[in-house]
Amino acid sequence: MKILIVEDDPVLADGLTRSLRHAEYAVDCLNNGAEADHVLAAQSYDLVILDLGLPGLDGFEVLRRLRRRGAAAPVLVLTARDGLPDRVKGLDLGADDYMIKPFDLPELEARVRALIRRGQTGGGSALAHGALVLDTAGRRATLAGEPLDLSARELGVLEVLMMRSGRVVNKEQLAEQLYGWDEEVGPNAIEVYVHRLRRKLEPAGVSIRTIRGLGYLLEKAPSA
Image (cartoon, rainbow, N blue to C red; front, top):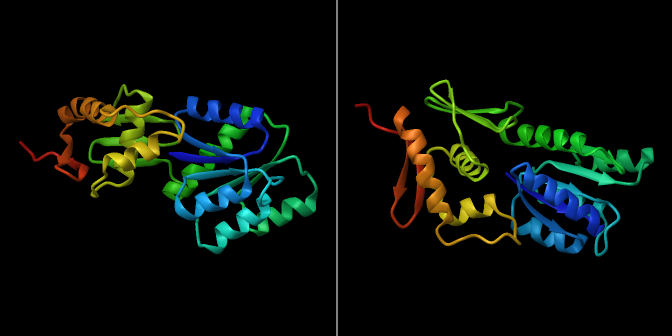
C-alpha cells in the first residue's frame, strides 16, 4: 500500500513518514501543493494525507483538482484549522476524513488503516486466493488456515499480487508499491522476495508464476 504525505512542516512530515514506513507502508512525501498536484495527476496512491496550509497551492485546491480529475484515492486532511467552515469545506470538496493537529499517532494510524481498507476492498479487509487469505487491515496472512510467517516486504509483495490476482505484475509495479522515492531498491530485491514467497506458498498449492520478460502472476498450482 502506497501513501502520499503532503505536509510543509519538516519535523511532522519526517515523523509521519517514519511511523507509516514502520507500519509497512510505502510512503512518498512532498511539502508543496503545486508539486503534489503535479504528482497526483501522474501517479496513483492508496491514500493521501493532506495539509491545508501549503505553499504553491493550498490543500483545498489540491483536493479540488484531484476530485475534478475523477481520482478516487481516499484523502485524510490533517490540519491545524479546526473551524467548522474549514471542516465542512474539506468534506464537501471530497475529503474522506478530517483530523485536527495536534493528534495522537495511534488514532491517525487507525484512520489510515480504515481509509485504505475502505478504498481497496469496499469496506472488507480480507483478500482470498484459494487457500490463501490476507487480512489487509491486520497485516496478517494465513495459508490453509495456518498463519504465514512473512516479513514486511514479503507481505507487501503478496498484497500487490493478490490485489491484481489474475494479472501480470512487473518488477517496477512491485517496487513502486513497496518503496518510497527516497528508498533505495537493490537490483535483485524483488526477485528475492518473490522467491521467498514461492517457498512458503507452494506447499499449499498456490504458486507465483514468472512470465518471462513481463513479470509475475499469482495463480493456483495445478492439482496433483
